[in-house]
Image (cartoon, rainbow, N blue to C red):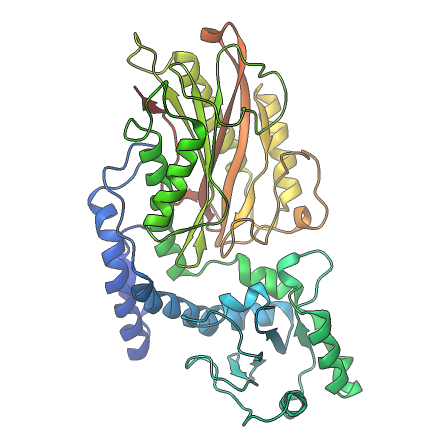
Length: 471
């Protein structure tokens, strides 16, 4: 079954295995129940308007669930991934204001920066657990006790060399990568300092932690999957508000007005967009014959008969969304969307089903793309697929499944295999001719946040199957 928005009934049996875990899970349950209560009473389904958004935790209230989820990942996910990557010790080394982006996925909140030089060490133990500590002047909450008493910078690096020698790891992972930006967070300067203080014996044991980093970033824990639907509900709910007469007055409101409403609405909710929302229009009489996936002129006044499209992304509780939906502005005599647009939406949903049917564990992004194109073409669907992973960032690490400007194989990222418990923006578009517009081409651009559980792709908060209507 899909990750359940109503996770109350699953909580104790799935997560609470010790008294300490029970206490921590109960705390998280209580806090997240506040978030989920609104949506449990009024679940969002298949593009229908949300009458009331889920509650959003204050920054203070977010600390407990965030830190509980981080601790859960460190205790239960990291040992598995380090064993999978064959890495005995992992070093995550940061300088203040030049932090490795990965750093913020490992540390408790509130953490705004690495203090001076912060060195996190993860050491695999014989029993399969992972010892974690820091070699740093300042403590990092309770998650990373420091093994350094302080002193000069040289003494800090010397102490790191000592703790490495004490544990004698066969492989030492560092965050360097030619191909993956988020796995390349170790700066040249810090790398040079590490080399200068390590004995030759351990220099030779340094390896790229690329595979570990990608797997850490792409894998979603059970706790995160219980929270993720709430995050997506917020994104879709604000789109539903924006694509309504609450915001849009035909003949007056511009696409730029709508985009800024979305941005400012998120800011008012204390939610962080990871890119500026945008809105565009397709209109009868436009030249829509081109293949540009972002078809639509900037800042136009909305008029009756227009097809609207928006692209929106937020991050909340360390989880990011990416959503595109479509709306129609009714003409004076109309009470519903033209049948041609209903059919076009249906084709878009059919393309989504084709794509997600080809999600198979072990298949690469390039394989999934090729299979999707083959099946779509066999069914006469003109489609473009450009699906990407979601997680701690919007364009996350994991298998790339097509690019909007490249419908062929993507080297490296497209060759990455599909793993269970990973999240994706199911993103792409279809083109079809609209009878009501004298067979003018129209493009249906859809994107919904989803999770692959190893067998099936589940939309985290439904998907759009009917049009947002504006009168």
